[in-house]
Length: 212
Image (cartoon, rainbow, N blue to C red; front, top):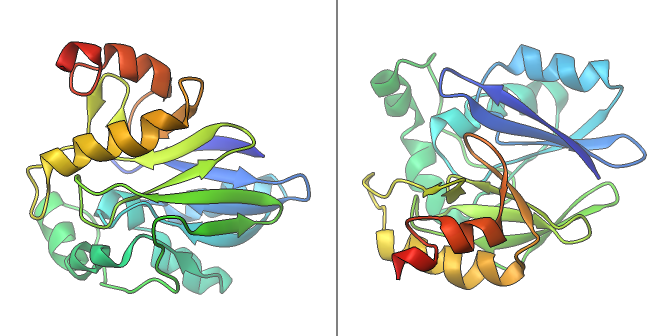
């Protein structure tokens, strides 16, 4: 699997483009700037097969419908409790100064333990609520790489002060589902630099050893 990170929106949300050796690809969390993302796909000669979503906040899903309709490809994820946030997309756009957005339902909801294939790439799905109720993580076991959305950041964790946020659930998801995958696992967060689960397990002030 190859990938590149494409920060989008004024929030510099880390949209990721992933592809296999045959050029079959997916966009993870296309939060905006659809034309730019499509141009990146085309410039690399890739065939975009799916749009994968970790959760329903606008800066992560803002270009999903436009890309899905333009290319005739499915939107996959998050977990179905995230309909709460997807229904609020028009209001999110108003509150945060984004272009108008429409509510939608993905073509496929995902659950903990599901598998998603993009060409020859396999992603394991982990339901990691807390930042939002239906937040999921995409883990690629062969490359030891996770796309974690806004669950975990380098030196921080996701906010839980939004409606239906749950701080205890977020901490539990990180410690019980993500960290056991291994210290060597790298992750792409929703914002900011990549890190490893090992580094965060040791040093993160919210979920690391110093937080106990």
